[in-house]
Image 1 (cartoon, one colour):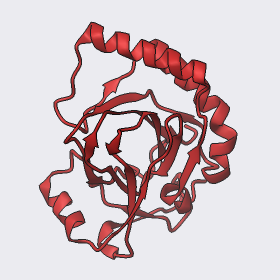
Image 2: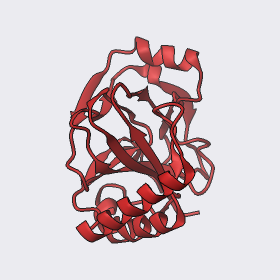
Image 3: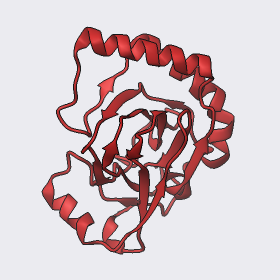
Image 4: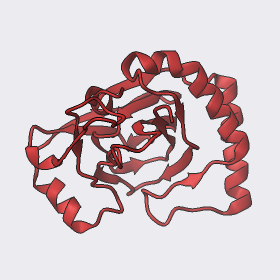
Length: 216
């Protein structure tokens, strides 16, 4: 049974990968980028990481699960990871993915961003909180749901939700909580949290992102 607090929590796993694992992952990613010539059209675009990178990150998730489950006890596994690469002038606007269909299984509970390289200036990750009821839909978990009865569900305000959804978020009073996790840290944040990345002012921000799922 997934509790609403799991979808609203924030947690960190320092030293998510060992230095040797991080060095190998970086080498494999760099080789893959050269071989494919990939470059994002938009800062929010990601690249599915190659199989060798997925294996390293899967080891990291398995090792980190006991720590993750202290805050997100319903987590059973993770989806494949996407690679994101932001340069000067790039940012990711505030958005919210939500949990999708409340009755679906497995269910997305949270996301993990592994910080491979931090920008020299800017590029900070943030979450935003608000007491406004406008962020929420009328949907409520009922019998047979993956979620505890009475759980409410936020609007989807993602990059694909359209300008109307983004405008709703823009009108809400919000409080921003900004972090600058050291390279090598995994940031875990609930699926119903508004989040984004500030403008990269200098340097390069490299991160990998996955979804954490409940049991099927």
